[in-house]
Length: 323
Ligand SMILES: NC(=O)c1ccc[n+]([C@@H]2O[C@H](COP(=O)([O-])OP(=O)(O)OC[C@H]3O[C@@H](n4cnc5c(N)ncnc54)[C@H](OP(=O)(O)O)[C@@H]3O)[C@@H](O)[C@H]2O)c1
Image (tube, rainbow, N blue to C red):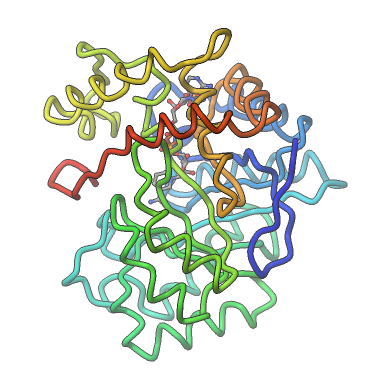
């Protein structure tokens, strides 16, 4: 495992971090399997774990708490998120701070997350949705400063809405935040335009999330893929999205190097970008932990393949199913 500096925090995060949504939110999760996978990742050098109160109303945080207690001698970085008070993902331009993150509510949820984790402090607290216009409300600045000054968190970040990397650039430039979490993968290269350069200048740590585009970049989806009605993916991969997602993924298949696979290529593509500190693939199966950490060990892709993949950028706009 290799490590990269995480902005101004000075932390060295594993290039392959751990996304913990699926294990407490997607159908087909087994806690026992998730815990074995978490332990496997720790044994292989993973030290960054991204969870959220909203992942199973604290269940993902509880699983992480168990993993922390099972590894008392290791420094494992814990990142969680405060859910928006109105429970609406993504936020919309007309959502006020009061319906989303009133100050006392943010502190209440920090305490709830700590309780779920069984910890007295955590490393990174993130706003689970974000609107740059909230910076116009002085309470936002005050809340973030109070969070960072408290003994309960060490750093504060924002998790940007899907396909809105522009809606966080003011926050990055404000010097107020330590980290951004953004979707960045072979399709979603748009953070490179303005967000990453701003992060570089202001030394804000970048967490690349959804490296597999929720599944299409594993190369395993087909036009017939479907999920139980209570699985979030059934509302995301609606026909209007599934069809073009499979087509765009299929177009990548001829580019997969011999002996490799699409998931490995997708992760290594992200490693080519030095603005990214850590990538957080969602993983429940131990096999996926092994494969993704092995992909990290192989390092960035050869320049020619990386250049070819850059042509597969796919700019999308938020819509009613995109969430
Ligand atoms: N608003 C936000 O802040 C927000 C939104 C979305 C995600 N996130 C964070 O980002 C993380 C990653 O995103 P995600 O989990 O939504 O999507 P993702 O990482 O793009 O995809 C996860 C899917 O890929 C599968 N997978 C993992 N490794 C694989 C491999 N080597 N080969 C084939 N399939 C593989 C997983 O399977 P298994 O699970 O069965 O192992 C899972 O079905 C989340 O877990 C969460 O921590 C944050």
